Structures are given as structure tokens and as C-alpha cells.
Image (spheres, rainbow, N blue to C red):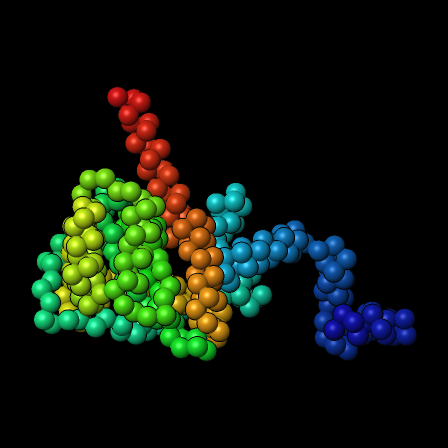
Length: 296
């Protein structure tokens, strides 16, 4: 409408055109003024759009408005969540939505299993008190590959992981060895898994005993008994595998998983631990322990 008036105002005049169009001349002049001098809100929106897109791109393009809002506030930007939601809608940016998982556990009914010591209580008072393990699969052009994770429950840090072309016991043992090497846990650590034959195998349970870890196993066919590990698997598939496929081979999956684990541990915000990264949550815990020791 403004463009039409601008094109014909020299011939007919603004007042005459506005009378025919049934609009007030003041409305036309106000619109022109806004176009020449953008309002403060428009300028702030433009700046925020740049920050929102940066945060979204830097986090695997998986954050929704809530996560983006928390990250902006961590960076010192005082912005309302509804503003982030409005601008993300305008830019067409969305967070990923998790789908239904696929069962990978194959229990061995002939093998004795440890008791369930966790009872679906996925909380720990400190790091290296409770670990949960599980693995999932990824389809590639060269066949399926399998990805195992071991997660420290306290701050959801991924302490061990492995990618393999087979789902044999060696595969999950490698993830366990990485976790033991990285964490070198002292004291009682409970290791919880499902009843997959890899986790209840003699070699795996023997290695847990040698390392001083206490084995715990959930019931058959019940994902809730290992819900935290299932959640991490779901995030991994949703945030990485489904978004960046198709995958050529195991090496491609392994490299991408390495980058995702680094991001997940050190930069991804988790609502379950206060919308901070897992590594930061652990660092805060150890800093508090140190300050209490000095105070004592």
C-alpha cells in the first residue's frame, strides 16, 4: 500500500489517494517514518536473530527455543523466552523431536544375572558412584555398526564409548576399558545395564569384578529399568544419526560420534542437571568439595 501511494502521490496527492483507499493520511506518514527509522524492537530483533542462529548452528542444529534461550542467558543476554520462540518461528528454526526407539537387547535366558540394584532410581550423590551402559545400532552403506555408551549418572557425562562392526562382547568391553582408563574410579561404583547377552557374559562380569565395580542388571524387556541409558541413545540417534545420514561406513560414524560426545559432555545443556553441560556440573561439584575441605 505504501509503495502504491509513493508511486502516485505526485500525480494525485497523498490526501486524495488516502480518501479513495479509505485510510488516514497519518497512517501512511507513520508507516513511512517507521521504514526510515526502524523501531528499537526491530533493531533488537535483528541482533537477536543473529545470536539465535549462531547458537542453533553451533549445537548441531538440534536446540529448540528453550535450549537456545538458556544458552543466550548463559552468555549474558537478557531476553525473554517468548521472544526467542517468536524469532525462531520467523526464521524457521526448530529443535529435533525424538522418535520411538528400536529394541536391541537380546537376553540370554540360560545365563544367571545380577540383581537390579538401581530400581529405576537414576540419581547419584557424586561422580563415579553409578554408571549405566547400553548400545544401539546405526545403518550404513556397508551394513550395521553398533555404538556402545557408558554414562556416569551424576552429571550424565559419557565416560566410555565404542563403535564396532559387530555386537560381540569385545565391543562393550572396549567401552568399559575406556571408562575405567579415563575415570580410574575409587570406592564402590555400581555398573547398571540391561540383560543383553554381552553385559551378562562371563568375560564382562569378570572384568567388572576385577575393576571393583558392582554389577546391576534390569529385568527382561523393560526399557524403564535402564531408562537413562536409553535416553542417551535416543538423543544420540535424534541429534546426530538421523540428521546427518546416510552413513557410508563405520569410520564415518566413529568420527561423527567422537565430535558428538565431545559436544555432549562439554557444551550441550541438559535440563536434568540445571541447564548446564555435564562437564560443568562435575566441575562445580569438585569445586564445592574443595571449598568445603578448605573451610573445615
